Amino acid sequence: MSVELNVLYVEDEADIREVVEFALEDEGFELVVCDSGKEALIKGSSIIPDLILIDVMMPEMDGPTTLSKLREMPHMLTVPVIFMTAKVQPAEVEEYLNLGAVGVIRKPFDAMTLADEIHRLMGTSGD
Image (cartoon, rainbow, N blue to C red; front, side, top):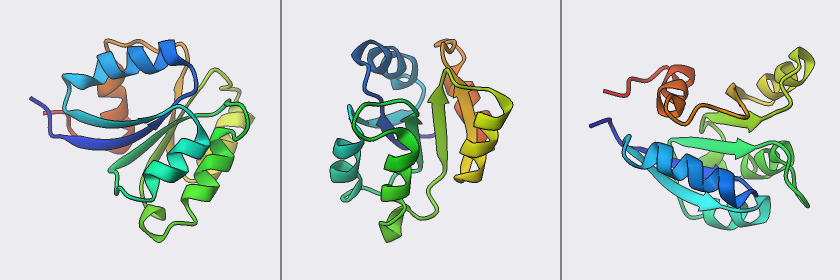
């Protein structure tokens, strides 16, 4: 069994949330699931995650905006972030990395390798 990682996971699409939860639940990830940036700010104020996994394109408050607001919380300043998005042109990826992301996971992603991809981007071991 993998080492447990506490993840603040933000995704507005219910079907994608379900796939990610299924892909990670048996891989040592403990998810705090949010369906919007607003919910992430509420839940994020009371937890200290090991990782923020966040969708880029969401209504009302997109991923980069949500991240910047989370970063206003002192305990969230250094939490690694991985963006999930279909927008993976080099300039877009560079923008996400400039926002402090440790990486970007392209949608659609392979649910079977998602946990390994997260560990690779974070430089951690899933063992």
